[in-house]
Amino acid sequence: MTEQKDDAFYLQTLECVPTYDVDAVRNAVDEQLTFLRIEEDVAPEMKVLIKPNLVGDYHPYFATTTHPVVVEAIADWLIRHGCRNVCIADSPAGAVSTMSNFDYDRFYQKVGYDHLERKGIQLNRDTGWGERRSPEGCKNKSFHLLNAVLNADYIINVPKLKTHNTTTVSFGIKNLFGCVPDIQKPVFHARYPRQKDFCNMLVELAMTVKPSLTVVDGIEIMEGNGPVAGEKRNLGMLFAAKDVFSQDRVLAELLGVPPDKIGMIQAAEQKGLLHSPVVASRTFVENTPIPPLKLPDVKTSHTVKERLAAAYHVLAKKGEKAILTVQPTHVPQNCDLCLRCVNSCPVHAISAENGKIAFQYDKCIGCLCCHETCSNHAIGTQKQLKMKKN
Image 1 (cartoon, helix red, strand yellow):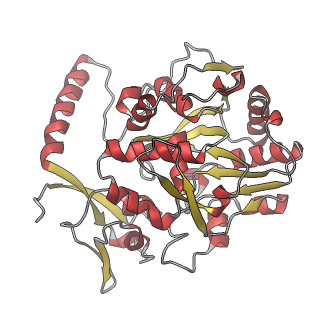
Image 2 (cartoon, rainbow, N blue to C red):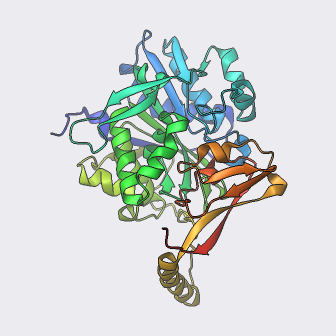
Image 3 (spheres, rainbow, N blue to C red):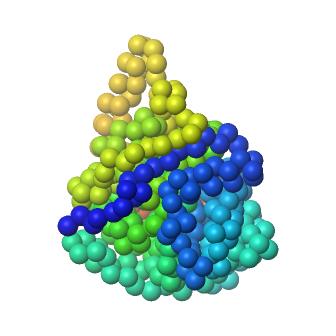
């Protein structure tokens, strides 16, 4: 049964913001939240959660995490509209694992969020979690979620726009995976090694979390081999919508990524979650050319020769996929033996032996959680012939 929504639910807004200039970002956020009538949805007594992408302790320069200027602009808007209880929370690598001494102060300082506490905004340090039932009909009957998510009355999802080596892209839907405690994320990779099943889980998680608003940081994005090892690109845009599923589809179309090639959008369509939203913008013209998003291990082309080369590349990739697998590899010169890779592996295929990281490739499922969680770039990737496991 389709839930009835007011007209504002199907509105999406796009603002061009060339840089992270504080005033420019604040003005753009003010325009978007006013356009979407967010002031009608929030109240002073509400517990409001801002959920950015803080996958690891990466400096904002690298376009891996949600830029603090965007988060600050949203928090400022909430405070100016009377919200007294605003919290920022995510589940970064190592925060809820066997690493019980996770240093939140150092983490928030490295990602550029530490100054927000001085403005009366809470930075979550609660590693506790609980269970929430999923909507009826979901394959995943429930999810474990951070306490900060369970206790929130209003959730604002603030992803960083980037590519992802597992899900192709990481927009609004994928960002909500950070609502799951860090120690349990690898369990889903082990449970759902097929991309189709993993993406269906992500959609059901988004249905369970039910963000009230999603503001996508698309000012500086990451393309290519994201989510942490891609290339930075200036897109210069902020996107905002209440409907996270339809918003992801609009973003894919805008950036030249066929929506039917993205497992999360396919799963959302099969569940009847996609609509045709009205997209509004003060500064963006529809025929403004936007170069397509460079996807993981995909080369763009323009000339006939390059197109032929690209076609060969696609065929070669299909054959390669049948016989090759991508495996993690250790880059010892970058390693400080923090053991995040060891703790993130869902199948316990990584160990630390004699001061070195060792992989049991016969166990490895190729989820690359270790690669994603290592902010030191000490985990690389390599292609190997597939070996039949006993």
